[in-house]
Image 1: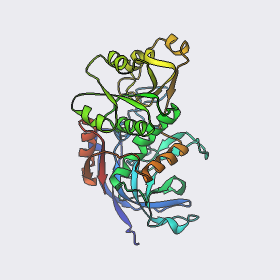
Image 2: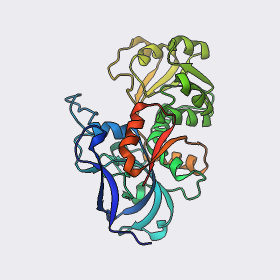
Image 3: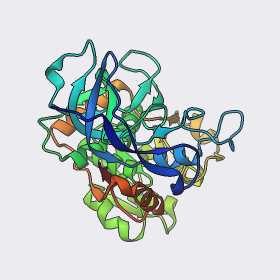
Amino acid sequence: MGVSDFMRAVRITRHGGPEVLELTEVAVPAPQAGEVLVQVGAVALNNTDLWTREGAYGRPDDPKALSGWRGPIDFPRIQGADVAGRVVAVGTGVTGGLVGRRVVVDPAIYDTEGPDAHPVGLMGSERDGGYAEYVTAPVERVHDVTESPLTDEQLATLPTAYGTALGMIERGRLRKGETALVSGASGGVGLALVQIARARGARVLAISSGPKIDAVREAGAHEVIDRAGDIAEQIRAAAPEGIDVALDVVAGELVSEGLPLLREGGRWVIAGALGGYELTFDVRRLYLHNAQVIGSAMHTPTHFDLLMNLARRAEVQPVVAATFPLNQAAQAQEELSLRGHVGKIVMHP
């Protein structure tokens, strides 16, 4: 299978608005030792694309500093963490058996080799990503999903959103029969949380609003709490026994309002701060009830293996909200930032 020398890619050379995304021709990357070359079938967009482009992550010593996910970005950088495609070439030390196989790439760059490693970087941020016709990846990050009935678009939605969701669910130890509260339920991670929690056999209460409520119910929520109303009151009515696990991408005031609604030994898992990153809560609600507040960034290799098993068996059905060609990356990111959609936005190289 011949691979040309040049490819189209969308990259950023500085932080800024959608105007910093440039469509360009670059050399097709050569797979290094231990790597494979993947022809991108579909690449999904994530909030992290917007925040990396804007440099919105801050730094520990300066929350307002322009920064990527884990520090300064090396420019130029090809964005895009979520890739599904086919292996077309391999580097030295990699068996050729993967060539021609349909794969999903785990975008995480981990701190150690082990199965419970922590992500400390991300494809599309700390290394070049999938806003391109081809991308390289370490062979151990590439998962064969040839047998999955899901489409390339659906598979591309999985790594960041569903990986993050599964990481939250695993770290929160959500078990069958427990009651889960999902915030931001119509977003990429939120919808994934609803689907995976439902597949786990949990009772799912989801917070959403307006026209998105039906889609959230369709994804598997047993009850939908309207964000426009009194959230705490609605949760109490829907779950008088309390919440076992909160799966929260919103944070902000929801944490202080919601902690008293946890059952004994309840877990509040936070993986985002859409509602604000500075919060106050009554710490007595924590220790008197053996509750836990757990931070969760993405997934471990073990979590990602679990996710790929779900994908091969199509136990989740990702919702694709819209697809764009690669040359409309700026429009695609704009659409994402408007938050008018339910599900994931995907691009085709």
